[in-house]
Length: 554
Image (cartoon, rainbow, N blue to C red; front, top):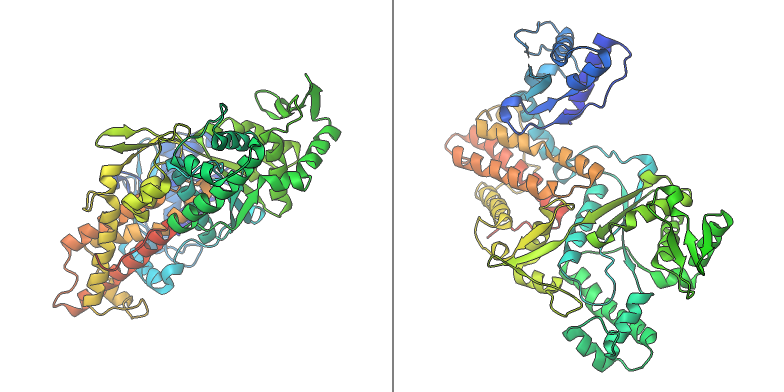
């Protein structure tokens, strides 16, 4: 990837100019303002603190070393790269037209047409395999992603959809990056909420869950013990409501459905509590057993066994965490709702108490979702019985739209799900806008009778005809795909994918408006068809990662 080449160029320049100095992390960004290049680095500002010089002076010294790799001097703060050899045997001028510095010390890189045209051939050659090198860190190779994990006390609702699609897409991205993935659903099928479910079905004074589904279940289930009724009801809800929604409506396939009950049945909870006692990390107070979580950074110690002898959810969570690592996972990713934010500290504490490295446990907290219709919020509550199920939402707007809309916002931000926009069948709807572009691409290729990437469209002499600004802009978007995968696999921000799809399609629409693809000029037609085909490949890859369909006709 070009970012890697820029980093190597900077590293070599630092070594040439400053010797074996401590190198700050080299960050390569895509500037929002195109005037500042295709890529930009603030390394001079960061390095200035180390070498005790002004950032602009450091920047000039660095790019002067770029030119030392060839023949041409640096003039007016601008580097016109010579034919200097890179570490991979290419030349600097193969990558950049120019490198400039800007106040207060940024180094800006402008990609060359030659490099962009060459990358077009790489896309056509690799097809769906085009992406970053397999870069999964060996110590984190096997990853467990636990998501949704809604209590089996009722149908899945909007919040479950946000975490569910985020987890599924993140798993797709990590797999693309070379990790071995396991998607896991944790079934909370014991404890207080199951008893409350039982009371709700019995309809007694301790009932908390309401709604039509409770009324239906009340007619099916017989018995008078809240615990037993709750367990039977939870099993029905899991098998008849939750699993069908997940598999058939959301199109998510979990590798593991893990029962909390099994941790108690197999004595795993008892064993971990014994371990904590033996390590003097648990103590008794007021008739309860407490975990010394403050010893590991938590804000207060936590109860493991209540005074009445009932084990808390934390006791199960500790055993569950241990169970995951014992199954051979190198990294655990938990995707939770906003109401579980307070649990992060205690889970981190238990991980350390059990001897696991903090970096091996990651958390993604999904903020709340508001369903908006006609400018007003649709109120929802599982306990009052007034809620919109996830299945109802998908039936209303379609799976593609539901997935895309839930993925558009960063997990740590609240989101409004605009039902009116979701149902819009026009380019105002971002999903329609993207899918329409894909259908247009397919139509162009059908008209030109281009069926597969194997057709020889990437002849270097021909693609050098792609010189229009809109053509080059589209090429710049296409080569970002590997970077999108790499960045998302590192920081789990899956909203990059829908945002990238929109930027890519916007660039394609601009190209289509500015450049006639099929014309009397057969050679130029061939070059532009190669660009259209490459766009199809990248856009299809992006949609596949999001689990969104790519219709060839609309």
